[in-house]
Image (cartoon, rainbow, N blue to C red; front, top):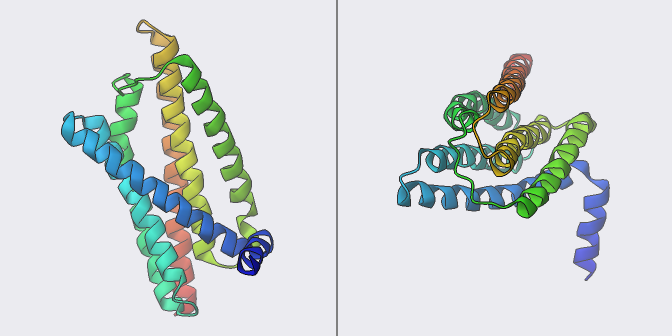
Length: 215
């Protein structure tokens, strides 16, 4: 009980500890989604599930690299290398998102969901993006670059969730092909992809500058 209280107190007061702990939980959940979509991709020979499996797999690797590097403590060189590797993977993530996002735009994502579960998904996604946005702003509270990058990754994950939600709601509510919906989906997808790309490039530049300053 005392140990639990200490952990709760640390969770409330230690921003870095809270971020890493949350990242561990997200890593576990994301790994489950990766395996699940990988199974569906093989079983149904689904391009959508296969590419989403790759996307979730990269998120798992990203979080794993950062969490593992942070455990090295004061080994700044290790942390700097981990930051650069994660930055490069973020750029690769942009490439991996092209196929699933394209499938969503042309409404080729499989959806087996009725309206009520879709509303529940909308509520969860709204909460997810709000919390990710708040934590993205708060990341400056930490002096640890790896902690800040973990928050950036969570924000990117939330952005992609918006695209998935949008596609789900369109396919649940719109029964016929619509040029307006296609245009809306394309514009939203482009905005999200450009935002993810901008965050990825900024992260890479920050990592390179930080590495040079330590040399």
